[in-house]
Length: 190
Image (cartoon, rainbow, N blue to C red; front, top):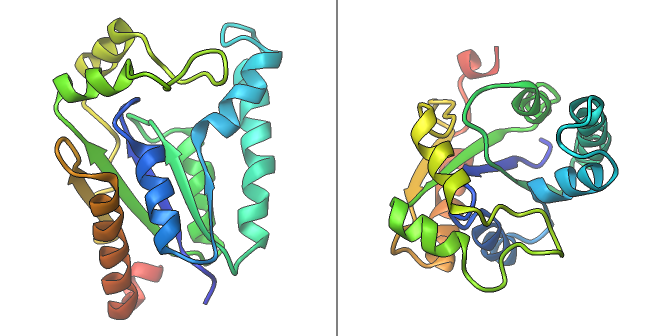
């Protein structure tokens, strides 16, 4: 069986990359591909309002995800912030169609803690395009139905408001190991 994929989704600033890094330390043969590795290079070339931005971002994402499709010995840990199933999500879930088991992790935290983390020293700035604008975060959190959830048995939701990244990583690892032992039914595959 090819190595599985872990997809960590949550609001900007919730701690996705921090948890992914802690998880990588627990999982040998894993690689992180965080959303800013897919967004920032395209945004530097085409601003988000440029007519070709979305097209180029999709092309770049699919090119980078190709490595995950061909490197079936490595566990890939992806981070993202998606509120609906869209083209981005489809590109990630295509990995499941290639035979990679797809685990979804939803990270949540209360808004006050999310805001504190969003503006914490060391986040964002000139080095990356991470969101640091509280007004935009508030708009994201209030305008929609929340972070996208697949809602299947291979998904776990963790409230990391007071949970250390290492604890969250341990819980994710334990969940994945349990689901791997349980396997999938025929209905899950088709």
